[in-house]
Image 1 (cartoon, rainbow, N blue to C red):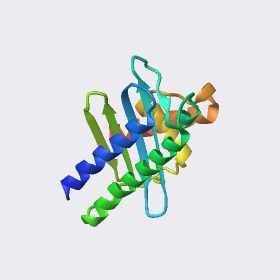
Image 2 (tube, rainbow, N blue to C red):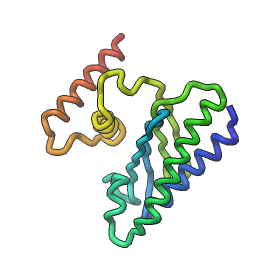
Image 3 (cartoon, rainbow, N blue to C red):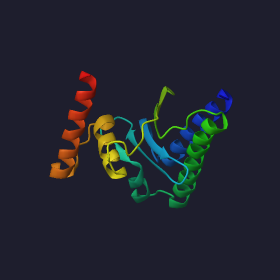
Image 4 (tube, helix red, strand yellow):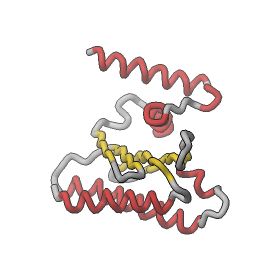
Length: 165
């Protein structure tokens, strides 16, 4: 595997996210799914000195934000994640299904690839995002809606049963 390309792509991913975030921040957590036909990416970030994460799609609605810049950087971010996915294929490695990328303001980062079939448990993208938000951010479904809470509870049971095996 060409680690120089990987390191360059990690840096570019981080730079594009930092260009999108319109304020000082402590940490961001990015999730992306990529396959041959599509991709989907979002992130949450923690503004400096707060414990409340901001969803990437909310940034365009913030006052004083340049929407064209956000859209351009988002496109570049998507292209970098696609290039990262392609890097695995070029190097004859198994292509990942999803990736978690976490970076804090000190420069410490963590990247985790998942090779699990995304539809293995029958979850839709929306349901996978709901589970991700619960696992990574501790965010429960809004208004504790019954279907969202049922999903989280089923996920907890499934994870517990896997750990018990």
